[in-house]
Length: 115
Length: 113
Image (cartoon, rainbow over all chains, first blue to last red; front, top):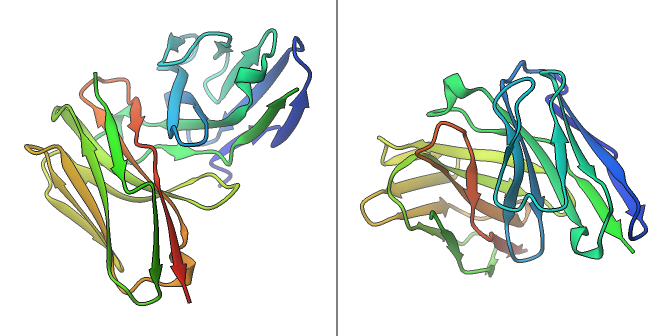
């Protein structure tokens, strides 16, 4: 099983450019999440989705948009990239029926640098 | 608002030593608490998940405990090995039905041969 796959793995952007990060999961999970990880700050939730066609804001949503047009995919968009968005981005998925005893599944991350 | 803190931020020990990593959280209303391992430049690997009703979970040389009343969890690693060197992250799944995780800052462990 592929689990959670993130595309691309690395990317360098210039300030003001736009891009979309793709997350795909093959576990038929209902819930999906985007986190960012910065040095010394752990992971922080950007946006999440509790089902196809739904999205909601997390802890640090400013400057990002998301879409969940298909159950297996969760897209994270940067409309106008800023240096403060340089980070490592992680996607995760979960089955809400297993919340009490099943961990979230994480992708390998996308390392994004904004110059 | 739930806050999760991990102490220490970094730890260096000689091979073979037993060690304890600490995690504290401010709101005891949780679904579960999860410990993850992260190798440099890699994603997160789930190590142990302790349900709200449980006191501890064990996997091989790892043992995680949970004390909700005091807002604390510990990850005990027995007979540490150089291959245990990594960053260990604690995450709390709060009481909402959204599955959102609140992470600590992590403890970076180095086990010296």
